[in-house]
Image (cartoon, rainbow, N blue to C red; front, side, top):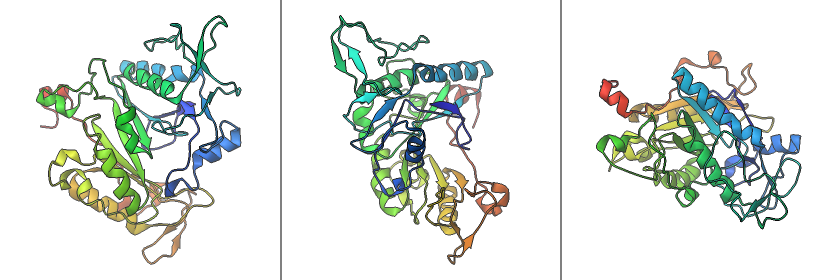
Length: 343
């Protein structure tokens, strides 16, 4: 499922498959699970289902890439809003009709991603030998698509950062228009992808202390590492995990922090102090901060509720001016450095 989106920090949302399992405190009232239940797309949980989206859906990023290249403006794609790209899950995969998906052993699986989008989920003649398709197969397909769309910045938000390096395939494609910072120093890294931003979800100090160190181990893989502090369920002291606060290497820290309170009818409280403190920490460290929304249960410092006209607290015209912060990370490219941009 892919679409132009109302999510303020991206341009498109796109899903290679649908389905996931709760993994941390922020998952309790998962909007993706509610969406899947409403439309019967997938059953959540370790014993549930994972439904691969249609071949037509898989063509959409190729279309967006062409549009971005023609316009000369990169587009951002939030990938797997209804799944987790780095979930370690070994169950059977299904299509939208509930059929179990198989893959041929005998050369029918393509070795490159092109506009024909002949996905491995398509059926093959009965004379072939088959094996069950796995999530690893689809994940490999996802990265082929990422490598085929150099004008798209893929925002992969995971709750399982400890799996990233193990599941990350080598990148054998030439570097595109957004070169990563190590390339400026003449370094070579076959695992690096210039058009992927890696983010992990945190909700309080405990999840931040667990998730962020795992994410920072992926520094050499991508130009942007960030966190989605949403739903914010408690205060977070990011401390040395932010870029310029790193004691060893400033460039080893986070590049981006998204902040937001929880939405939905069962939303848990979000205190204004948690948001303002996150902003202050980012500003002090020179790290981009993006405040998405105040949440459906927004509280003032003394704990009193404050109600916005927008049910998610997402209309920033109603926010205090100090909360109106929506920044994106600045990525320096080789072309920029040669032209003097950012000098």
